[in-house]
Length: 188
Length: 196
Image 1 (cartoon, rainbow over the protein chains, first blue to last red):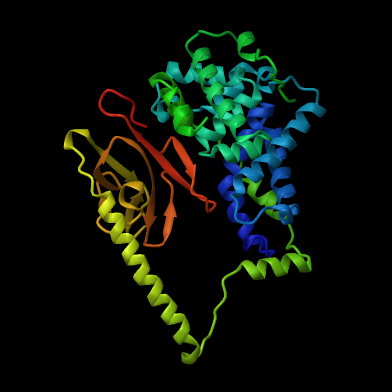
Image 2: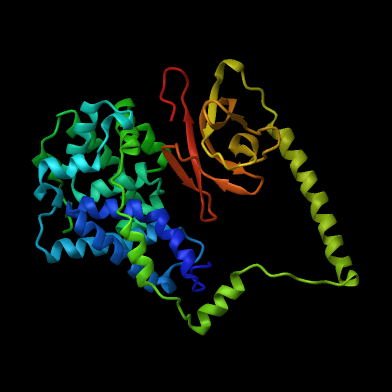
């Protein structure tokens, strides 16, 4: 409310709170720190300029995420990047940076390695649905808004994304199979 | 597909992958992100209709005279009496014995060092914090309480300093509360099932 009243300092709190998820979204989309920084900056500035369109009473993060995802997709499309841009990034660089300290996460290093590889291969729409739900704690309704789906579509996307991810981690599905899905159109 | 139905179709390995996604370390945003954004935004001049909308939705102080207060006080007393009658009727209906063998011990933990008090509220206590105050564990640096809960689905949240309601950052599933916030969801399936 304070931000909507024109309080710039209140917006600082929102940027501080959500800069991590938005920066990492852009990094997953582009595989480049520099591009991720630029896109995250532009997302927060765009959101601030569009605050009048923010629906009072709803959560800020899904609305911000929608702006960021659209902005990132446009960037990827305009730069003629591959559908999953992480595939085009240096293997040793990108994913090692996303997960810099496997021991600190408390996860089995092998599981972590498989997880990051599977996430890299998972089509964008599935990946973001899974990340939004299990990592960012978004409800199905919020995921539906963020990804432009119906609520049942969001549930299906999360469910199938997780199942697909698990099969890829366990070696039951190849990258090509992971990208196949009748009726599924990946953006970018 | 409801969230709970969705969950039914997930096995332990799926849930393990979900937990790994949640605990996966993120890339830290560069410090210049915040400074560059804040250097690029200027105070906004809102349109008149938007200022009116904001004014209408913000809390206001209302002053009343004692004479005007009498009808309102009467209405309040009637409402309280009706509420007490309804609550006592509901309590009678709810008094169903649950065998202890079907109860499961659940430890609720919340890491927040700047709170003065924390209670857990949820569907299992009608969202009432009385008797559900959590204790501060100095060694683990967490607020904690262990409750015996029936198997099934429970929604819950933490009440911090008697006024602020927050969801459990460690929960895997969430449910809209209909007021723009989210409750955490806990599903207990007994010793042989998955508890999430």
